[in-house]
Image (tube, rainbow, N blue to C red):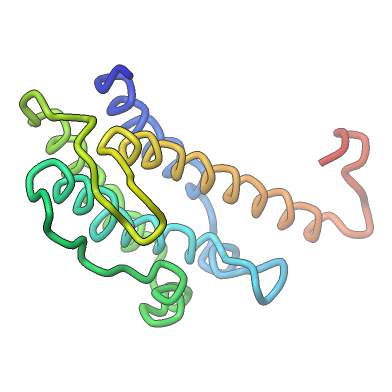
Length: 169
């Protein structure tokens, strides 16, 4: 595992997320294809909270506080509790980008971390390296989700026309 490559991917993914949200109106950012699905604003709110309260914090505990319990998180519950969809897109995106920049700086400042350091979670043992890999993978899951939201919004906006000529989604 090349940590500098993964750290760069986190930096690149922040820019990708920013680009996927560029130009979205507040109405589009709050739109959901279905009530149970997340909006773009909920995705970026989730990413901002994850950046502040999950990955960096839990990686820090695993590397530097062996034996201490991770602080609790509730990513699904935060969507409602933190009222993501009522927020401002620009402010929420900036909160994510600022937190991500702090994470990148923190990662680059680590001195010979033990990527095999472990934490025993309710779901099993996880290594520090697993957390870093999952952090990058988490971005990709939500990048895909943002692209899917763009697709669904487009499909709705072009009715009565169709996008089938583009290929199957």
